Length: 317
Length: 317
Image (cartoon, rainbow over the protein chains, first blue to last red):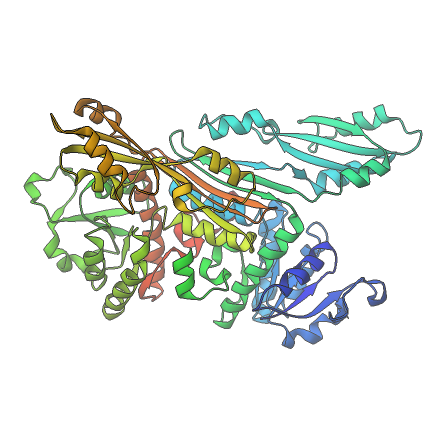
């Protein structure tokens, strides 16, 4: 399978690195919007300008779109879907339906196949909800995210005047996790399941009390949550808060039986890269058998994600 | 979807009960080898002799084969595969390949579709190993079974002279589970991960010391394990050991990241019935689009397991 990578940020680099370990994958090129000269790219990786990607379409089996979910993917995924078989890790839950529809239209026009939402949530957690729904049909789903960084909340804090930099951790409330795991089936809003812990680097002389109040009262993001704001200096920030750990749990329970799928990831980026490559494998196989349009992880036969042969898969798994 | 149930033991009854709750499922009939008169069947369920099942093939969309995995399914699944679309919960790991091949041949001859191994392991645990393999490609899998009854080990104890009845619980060793969950990646044999706890009802006057020694030294089944044998009277046995709880965990770890899928089931039988019905739904859809032969859960698109429509599935999961 010949892949190309669109976007050479953290995720794009992680996909290139993960691809090196896969015997069945060859990296054809990276497409980037940044100047080739300023990219810290490896000697043996070809880099082409993003606006020329279309020219290379015939040489690529699957393009892995590694751009940002908030602003880039809503534009670039449907655009590229017309020329390439493609995989992305779109993760804005509320906008999946419209992202799907716009991508589906373009992919069908171009007779190509794009899979969206290959990540942990949406992605493997969505699959866990589906399979646990088969096992425990009349249950209730609980999803805990974290402990890990929420990019959306982190960016919201960075917009506040007087803030140099910041990070926000979403932390499941341990007594709630315990109650859910014990099968007690509490009725909960999301804000009762998680707390928010913020580390903020203030400008010299900034009014930290005002910043803390602005954070804690920010509607939608913080006002309903148990929110802690810690002020720290920039050096400590760089040392202690460049971590990439993330994870979470999907738990389904009907009061008698309980199922759980959980992940503790040392690097969210490396994990997403591996998942994107697995789904790229499936898109490659499915496109060869003539499928076109937009699909999600729900549409993929598990066997198509795996490089193993039939016999080995059956024996080992 | 019109289903039929072959075998009217605990699992067959559980499937009939679970089907009543599914709006998209209608129970056509039960096929049983036992005399209709001695069956404790419900008024509104049609029961036909097993040897006449073939006659009804045109009226059934999917047959759910609820017979025993050890002795019945190896014969009846391939036999019925020639006439019916079918699902079974075959669970003898070492014999899956031959069960697959014999069923595949018959199903292809009859132009029908059979799915085997719809249960927890093999079944959902196999799927968990596959998906976790995508997320953590260079990891090691650990599987813990229990706490729950092992039928194979229970039957082995029942063969010993002087034993009236018995039950054997497979119990994960908690310090080992803790070490694996902590990401310590211990190197372990299966016998170092589980202990075996037996409850035995001895005949009056039987030599309980001899029975205990026979159990503890039984090769393959017990001799490598930490085995505890408890002797109890028949009344306590019936009260305390008719439980149906089971479960377990699949854990995959590479020393940095860790993923886990676990189930705690109040009734293994009711759970298997629900899973069989979900996979029957998929077999129904796949057979309508012309697929034939033998498949496993690896071959099923997750979307086909679920009764929900496309929009609701995307929104909810």
